[in-house]
Amino acid sequence: MVDLLPDQLIKWQNVEKILIDQLSRASIKEIRTPILEMTELFIRGIGEGTDVVSKEMYTFLDRGERSCTLRPEGTASVARALIQNGISSKPFQKLWYMGPMFRYERPQAGRQRQFHQLGVEFVGYEDVRSDIEIIAFAWDILGKLGIKELNLEINTLGDLNDRLNFQKSFLEWLEINKDSLDVDSQNRINKNPLRILDSKNVQTKKILENAPRLFDFLSEKSLERYINLKKQLEFLKIPYIENFNLVRGLDYYTHTAFEITSGSLGSQATVCGGGRYDNLIKQMGGNETPAIGFAIGLERLILLAGKELEADRQTDIYIVNKGLNAELLAMNLSRKLRKYDLLVELDVTGASFSKQFKKANKLKSKSIIVLGDEEASNKEFVIRLFTKDCSENKEETISVENDIKLENWINNNLFLK
Ligand code: ATP
Ligand code: MG
Image (cartoon, rainbow, N blue to C red; front, side, top):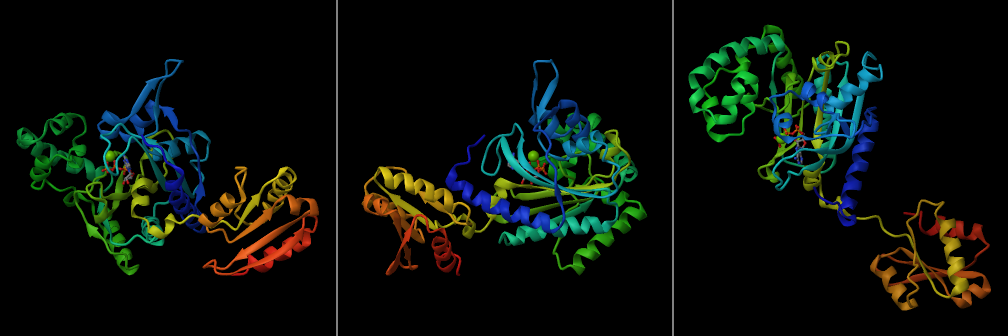
């Protein structure tokens, strides 16, 4: 698990600001659920045979002997929250969440035990247009962050009936090819055979190339839905690649599954994964509620986002001050200035004037206020504006009581672009 330090967080905050802004423009509303849930929720929601549930969860008994788990993902929690709060039957809801997730994995570049996700869930939507809207939204926010060279991969997993039909013939094939599979996959034959398709074992993946394909077992209706999806993506000029092996790591998906990957992420290439989960909410005790969602891994997103997002906000006013009375006046002035949309830094180091000037210079502050003994006894301060290259500066003296003059100075000098 990693600490995020102030220098790194500038980029995080810039990225989050853009994300939240885009979400609100699409009228997607935030939901916050607890980080801790009953373990049962994830076993039922994500599925027992999945990697996440079988080996990645942080699970422990609390003081009341209840099995609790740090959330490994957000969808199951959102579904629970909707059911528990009696709002799962509200017909249409577009929701987002953002926060830490926990998975006991082998840490490596782009893979941590505590990581962060932005998730979006469209609940109550069945029409293929909701699949398109959510894919287009994911695609566009990545573009908005200046990320290029992304690949969208899509697949369809059909409905439960299609899957059942496929499973029959897949099981027959598995019986014949059992011995060539890795041990993990062998163990899944009886527990959850579909999960074998998600195996990361190289040899198993190779053998699976000759297995029956789920795609060939789709009903006409499921196939039509998928063809419609592709047509609409083409209309929107969103390029995609079909990947019949894309089954996603969680059990609850139906129909559309998609991932967005980037070549510049190395082996942990997936930045966004999502899909439709029409049965999850009902299976968890809610009403029959179709839904589709995605999650973006924020660590990977930050790695991909443009360098320009690393820039911190520039200091507008740096307050240089020294001497007992001057320091008191400076403190009060800094409070006054906070009512404007300005970045104001009050120097409270007590260092020499020259050190304080140096600091203001280092920060490339647009202006400085100087308050020393002389200014304090005259009840005034000097405010100095710098040009971009610091070659010239313009100075003005303002009485500490003359708020109007101060405001005019700010309006004329700092708010003018
Ligand atoms: P992977 O195949 O990389 O393990 P996944 O299928 O387990 O991904 P999802 O459950 O779909 O991942 O989560 C969505 C996104 O969250 C991923 O695409 C990735 O960007 C991010 N993510 C998942 N696990 C981690 C992790 N351990 N560390 C950092 N980011 C992660
Ligand atoms: Mg994983």
